[in-house]
Structure formats: C-alpha cells, structure tokens
Image 1 (tube, rainbow, N blue to C red):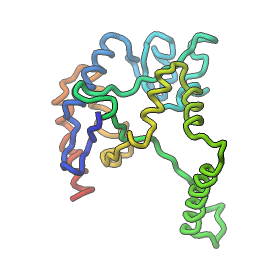
Image 2 (cartoon, one colour):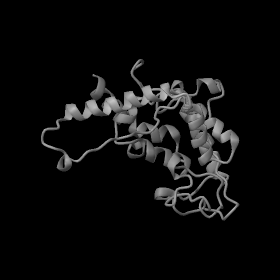
Image 3 (spheres, rainbow, N blue to C red):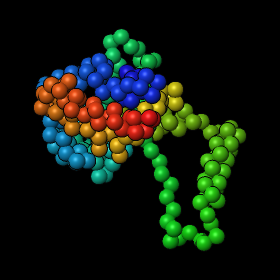
Image 4 (tube, rainbow, N blue to C red):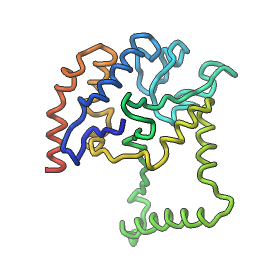
Length: 228
C-alpha cells in the first residue's frame, strides 16, 4: 500500500499499520476458506498446491516453470497454467499508489584464488561499472533494442494469464519502487520476526496486535542502531 515497514521520515515502525492489518485479514480469510496452501513447505516442492488441491501458494518468480520448483507440467501436460496475484491495495488507495519495497538482489562474486595478484578491488569495480554503463550506452544506440518488448517476452514466458503479465510489468516500473530500510535490519524478511508473526496470525488465527507487539521493540531497537 505504499507504507514502509520502517519510515525514516517519520521515525516510525509500521508493522501495526492499518494496511498491514487489512492485508492480514484478507490472507487469513483465504487461508480459512482453503484457497491457499495450508501446509507450507520449504521451496514449495510438495503439498496441496503441487497436488492441485489449493488455488494459491507463495514463492519467488523464478519458481515458475523451474525444474526444481513448479515445473511446466506440475498439474499435467496441457493442463498447467500459471497466474500471478499482486499485492492488493487498501480501500482508500488506488493502484497508482501501489509500491513495492524490494525487487530482488544481484551479486557479482569473484574468488580471490583465481584473481591475479596485480588486480585490486578498485580495478574490478571499475571494470564492472564500465561494463554496465557501456551496455546501457550500446543498447540505447541499437535501433532494434526494445526494453519493453524484452520485459513483455520475459513475463509472457512465466505466466499464461494476460492480466498477470500486465500486473507484473506494471509493478516492475522503477516508479513503483520505494526504499525500505527495514529489509536490512535482518538477513531477509523471512529471517525476521515478521515471518513467524504472519504465520501465527494467518495460519493459527493469533491476535494481530499481540503477535506484532512481541517484536515491535526489537524493530525499533534496530531502527535506532542504524539511524541514531
């Protein structure tokens, strides 16, 4: 809904924000009604979703049609179609207000064992920057290069539903990205207290405030450690 977990402008931790509460209620309702995978498994390699007995499950984009996750024929040859459910926006917001706070990470790694002794970190960084900058320059000079067409091609390779493709491309725009420092407070969101909180609320029906109160102070302490 465009609200950050941790907002540096207001110095607030928003894990109990009304929008978070609304989203938790929606997820709880989906879970109770059986539309969602009820027994989450690591990597989502089995369970009700894989067996075709649940409408929804959660995972990363690369899971779709991957041989080790949700294969192209997970529900049988000719009967498997994938769609994407974007995050809903609150009632008093619009689609245009929607923001995502993380878009994935990319790392370039080089082993010291294979690096010549005369190559220092600064030289490696310069080469990487030149590679990225020149790639963009040459793409801009290439009359046949069409970034939108390539993105559309990628989205179409993942999803069968046209509305899912439209939603993915809409949220992929850089204007829909916001910086949320809360993602850096722990190794990942799945490694943060929020993971257990959401599981307790959505799956076990725990009280929202009680679950979030248990970890509000921990987030605030880390907030102050970063920005005090």
